[in-house]
Image 1: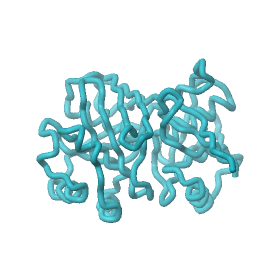
Image 2: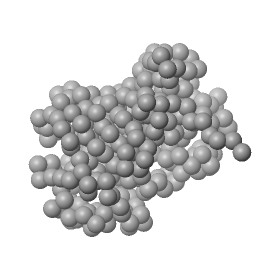
Image 3: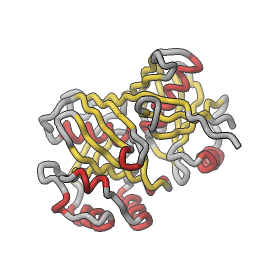
Length: 281
């Protein structure tokens, strides 16, 4: 199986979140896709098969299939652009439809914008949030009281925790197995810990233990869910946001997010991509 390796949401042709992309003549079985994702070892590998006027796409982490993955969608857009040209591509999820718009940059890399599934958010139970905070060695005093802790959805379900100190974000650590179990109980894909620097700049970290990954350096699905959350709580900041992620991992990544004022409407998430050159020998 030919797996192309692309980093999505790179910055100055560095960093970004690696994803595998497989263009298939026939969609493999779930076991084959899961086996391939484990062999690749990235947080997600996307599998695409042409269907009518678009592409069927499925996403597999090393441990599970996920319903929607932003960075693997961006990586897939780059591969489609490279093989079939610039433009807009329809992508059919297991449930629903999204799209990617692909443009080639002067650096011969690609700039890709995904249009996410629709969004929603709801308050998370205090008892549950307390267990999560304890597993991260945090307390309610570490949260910014202006931002309620909520579940947020944009194709996948996330928990949004807004911290009041950038240093707390930099020092993030957690107990893998207990957090994995807690997340599985609520059907969460990631926990999105953020620090809001300004009306336009947000710092983010995304643990992903349900997929077998300690942390993602760039998470498009969580970025879309975060934008939907900010809209739902009537955040007074900008509707064009820059999310900086991966800095504390030494893998600087940059995501551009744009949203309308219409509740539940799809979110635009954009970023640059780069090919991953693996060392030989």
